[in-house]
Length: 330
Image (cartoon, rainbow, N blue to C red; front, side, top):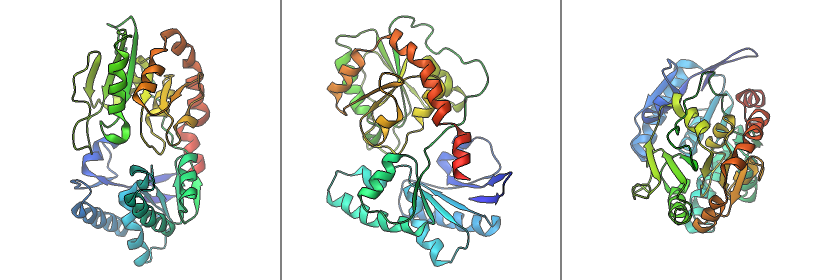
């Protein structure tokens, strides 16, 4: 929610799940509600806090993010909220289900109608907008690509000084089905049969999966858990490349985060991701298959990836800066 909006300043109030509060740092403008899964209790807790915050803060604009907040749209319309309401899916919910399955058809029917209740629907990538059009989603849509602030101005720590030979690859994200870490681990097990000089560092944990997909022990794989946000740029900058093997995405923040550090990105050919890199210039794309990923990784060299780093940094400055996002959004 935006409590004040004018030509000079944007004063925001964030209503977020309590388990995500730490991601925004130590701020006084955060309101957190208890979230234990995506059940009715979490939804009702979100309703209560969001509506209370609207009454106390009197926002000029309400900006809803992610599929859980879709349930707020009919409520806001029923109480005749006068301020504009934007909705940003950060990845359509229907993408989670098999194409043409009964579950996907049901979710598409609900999601495609609810989004029409927003004054504008903000798609974070061209791929998201194309999906919405293909599925017949209603409402007024626009594309504003996701972006990230530039990295802090301090010396970054080399995370792999003890590993001067070979390659250090990085994965950042949830160890869940969407992010494809299971595909990456299968590919890496194949890769290590011929490339023992390649190491894989996993940053993250399982969040929504029934099981931890990174629990199997594989030689050359190092699980770091979640790291402090103040340290994440050191990991990106130290890695030779970031691997993003997702099954579906809106526009994953890890891609611009890697590019801002000059780190090449290797992405699956799903959703919008091939459009986020320039093949052989700022990274590579591969068909979403463990064997195809293993073949892609087997041909990597440190020299080739190092030559890409200036182009990666330019790609961030040209396309993914927070300043560009602010200009387009406000």
